[in-house]
Structure formats: structure tokens, C-alpha cells
Image 1: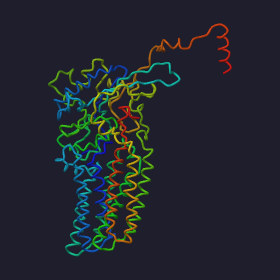
Image 2: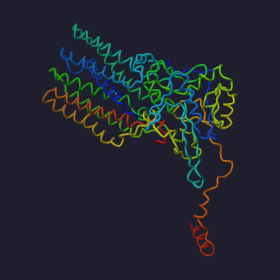
Image 3: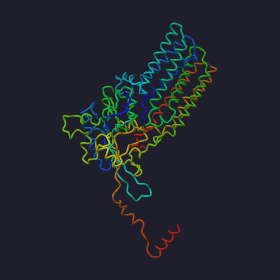
Image 4: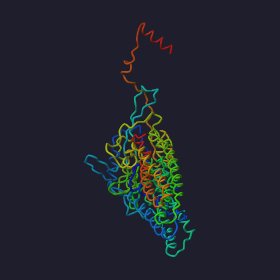
Length: 303
Length: 250
């Protein structure tokens, strides 16, 4: 699939922002007003930036508001509704806490839970597609939730460290290890989830299996088209190993190392860990799209 | 509402005869001609006369070569021309993923359509379709797909003979048929029953309405390559006897 920058930014940023919102709502990590004043708005801003980035993927962004209407049937619609609901409820929670000194933990837990459900809905946009086995035949929702939780806890620890609030760095380290494990687990499942996972082949696509082995003799046109650009993306796949390495090192190994040092020198070092983690996640999310194979490319001879 | 109807009154669709199609692309051309001026936004082209032309088409013709199994390697490969368009699936995944309600399946006749005034061009329906039947128009920024020529088949301003999809009307070989596949007595349903019409990618669980008729078996053996006999000369005399005897030893 075509790895559009808009949807890579959308999934990485909204996951990180919602992860941060969830950790604040659940009361993990940083405490105190100063932490709340910085971490709360940062969480909202990152989430909103992710949401706005997704508009870049639309042919008619002026009609994006219509996407809030089909929440009964469509995961993409649910994602939009849940994201706005989470941000609204979290803003109320934050306002009551910071302006009136009322930190209602029940409200925080509901906002945090909604943030998690939003990340799940984001993942389901991809995981629902039987046409892309790499997304639907693997534990994609767990991977998205794991990455959001990891990013959220590092961001939480980094901001707590900056404002001098108690930044329990060990939580970030633990979550980074869990996150790395989830990423490896997903990658293992994805390795076998190719175009033919559900039995699709050029023979089932054409219905000609009784006659023999099918080969594309002539495509419909000599040029390219939307279908090939969007769903038969092959550019840069040969750099997959290097990108996966960058993803593992920047996304998890370097942040773990930095978080360990942060236990000694102070939580502010987690800022570097967070930047590294985001860079690693961008590489891994690029691969999430670029390596995903769509069954319709079978008609164009991609086996 | 982008939920699918539990049942449609009719199941209008196409039956495409792979035995007859000659791969002339007339259906694709007439489809583009009719639909660029008909329902919804025009089917735009990008750089049409330049070095890298591309454009929106609702019907595309692939040509496949089918090689029989190795045991019959002497049999030459068969060429099959393969028109590909929307199959108007009963369990259309493109409809349920739509976040705006622009995609829908009509309860009356089962046609899958896009309301282009509501489409925001997210492209998720094209991702959900296993058949590559939906294409985003680069100029209009909305999703285009086969409408089964909804603006022809009910159009009383046209002579009755023209009230079929443009691709069916134009096919010079008679390889395309249009009708109600929900009615077991209709011509198209009979054709599907007689010829063993098939669903494309049944493992995708979309339950397509359109059916494809596989090429008929050859009615006479296809001669192998004429030079094959020369490549394997039969020795005569003693050497021939030796050759046959050694062969028998395995």
C-alpha cells in the first residue's frame, strides 16, 4: 500500500497524543498543576495534529465533517467520533482540575478509556480489511495500542521530568520493553501475512484455476493508474531490513538506554528518548503501509 | 446509511463470457465515453497526450495467459481476455467501510453507487474492494465506480434496445450480458447455470452478483508444436532397438 505521509503522521501522532491523554487520565506518572498545565494541552495538541494530518489524505477535505455520520457501520467514522469525544471529555477533566482544583479521577478514567478505544478504532480502519492480509491477519489493534501506550508513558515521563515532578522512569522502561515485544510479535505474524493468506491467487482472482497456471500477458494499459499507485506499491521495499533496524534502534533500544541513564541524571532526558521513539515509530509505520500487499494487485500480475 | 440491505428486490448485474471476449477494449472505451458525460463527475485524464498518461476508468481489460499443468506441457498456453469492473457484491465491503454515507447499495436493484456530493475522497472503499473496481478521480477528488449505467437502464428517452449498460450495448462479440441475477428464470441466470458461471475471489466473502463464464473446453485436441517430433527423432535399426531396450530397463 502507498505509504502516504498524511496517514503515517495521523496514526503516529494521534496514537502518541491519545496515549499521553490516557496516562494523564489514569493518573500515571507526573502529578501537580504545572505538569497538568503542560502535559494536558500537549496531549490535546498532538492528538489534534494527528487528526488534522489525516485530512491531508482526503480528496475533498471540506466534506470531512460528514465522516462523523456513519459510526453505526464504519470504523473510520467511529474513529472520528471517538477522537472528538475523547478530546472534549479530557478538556473538561483538565479544566476542572487546573482551573477549579477538582481532579475527578472517575472522569479521568473515562477519558483515558475513551482514548484507548479511539486507538483501537484507528487500528480497526486497517485491521478490518480482508483485502490486505498483513493488516487483518495480524494482531494490528494490539500493536497500535501497545505503541500508543509506549509513546504516552515516555511523553508523560519526559514532561514530568522537565517540570521537576516525580518522573517514575522505570515505568517508561518497562513499557518500552513491552512495546518492543509487541512490535516483534506483530512483525512475526506479519511476515507470513502476504497477499495469499486467505487463499487468494491469480487463479482465484480470474477463476481460471481449472485451466492451469495464470500469468499476466498484457496489462490493461501501458501507463500507471490510481490502483497501481495506491495498492501495488513496491518502491523502497528493498530497504525494508534497514528501516526495520532503524525502527528497532530508534524506536526502542535507544529510548531504553536513555531512560536508564535518566534514572540517574533526571527525567528530562526522556525528552530525547521520546524524540528517538517518534522517529523510530515513523520508520516502522512507513513499513506498516509500504509492506502491506493488496489482493487486487493479483490482476496486475503481482503474486 | 452505509449498512447493506438484508435483501434486494432485484440483483442487477453482468455476466461476462470469457470464452467469447476478444479483448478489443470497446466496452472500456464506450464505458468511459458514456460515463464521462453522465452520472456524476467526469472521468478525468492526467497528462493524456504527454509522456506519462493516466486516468480514471470504470472498466479495464486484462489479458492472461493460462499454462496447462506440467504433465500436458505439449499443450500450448491459452489466452484469456478478462474485462474487470464492479461486481455489485451482495456483501460489498466498500459500502460498510464508508465513513460519510456516500457509498450505498440500492435496495430496489442491488446496484452499488457513490453519492458524489457526499464523498470526501478518503479512498477507504477502494482499499476494501478486492477487485480494484473503484478509482479515485484525481481532478474531482471523489470515488468513481461502475454505476451499471443507472442513467441508461431506466432511461425512457432512449430506445428500448439501448436501455442496457454501455459496455453491454457496444460489445461487438456479444460477450457481455445484463439482467437480473436474483431471478432464476432470467436469461442471465440460465446462462450462468448452463455454463457454470463463477464468482471471482470467493475467499474474500463478498458474494459478487456479476458472474464470469469460464472458457469452454477445446472441442478438438490442440496440436502440439510441429517441431517437437523433429527434436526427438526415432532411431531405426540396431541403435533404435538398443534405445528402446534401454528405455524399457528404466
